[in-house]
Length: 211
Length: 106
Picture 1 (cartoon, helix red, strand yellow):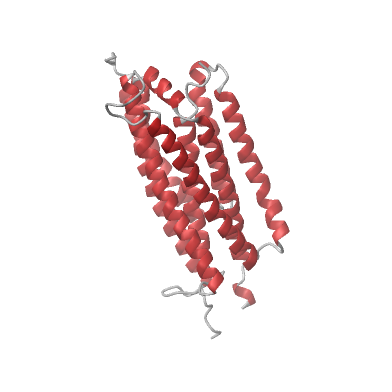
Picture 2 (cartoon, rainbow over the protein chains, first blue to last red):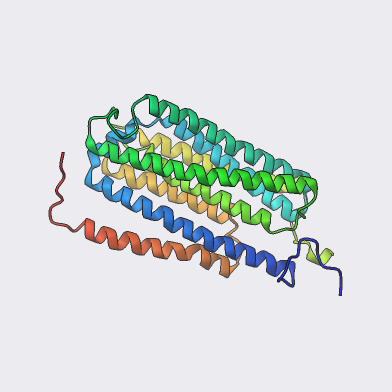
């Protein structure tokens, strides 16, 4: 019997099986996330079909620059996350840790931009209620979804930033071996949070721009 | 020990060269969807924007999320949620889009 690999955990007999189990587990969790967001987007789509004019007017009131810049930031964070995960798998420690750090910083940058956007939205009267600025009643429905969906997404991203920063910290301290499946699992979660935004962007920011 | 090592890339350069093109494609698609949003596409605007989003999602899933690797278990786990989502959309929309008159209060 050779000595067990430091990344190997109970009850797995081999690192390969452990990685497979971890990836399968996170994919099942991500599937539940897909169904959660799909349910919310389904209701959003139904309301949009019933109130096309109000939804177009509301989408035009969102700030397309904040939204587009944040999309680019998240796509870039997915690049560094993918490199970090593959670098960990290949045993490239410095590259993996550096890319994890950049990924967490890009996630933070997204939240900062989103914070400025929320501030502009609140000052611009885009919170549903008595102070709402737009005249179409259905525009309030749109912005109810805007706040809920972007808010839930921001919570997911915050969890991702904490997870990525934790990985970088443990990797840097040397308490987490690079062969651990934690890198791949965290990367898959991060990419899904990116994917959710990929669909929120055309639904919340792009409609009603050409009219 | 060597047997436990995954046959990974040799260097950081190889890894970047493999991943950066995927990112460039994603940024290109972002630019395309942003430009098309300002074109008078009429009723096609929504489907075009969502189609590009689906394309981006596929690129991320295949390259960044490693579904290109021939691992049937992971591919099944990843795609099974889409089956349920397809049921959800098909059944909801088959009701919504076939109602005779949708009353919209203005």
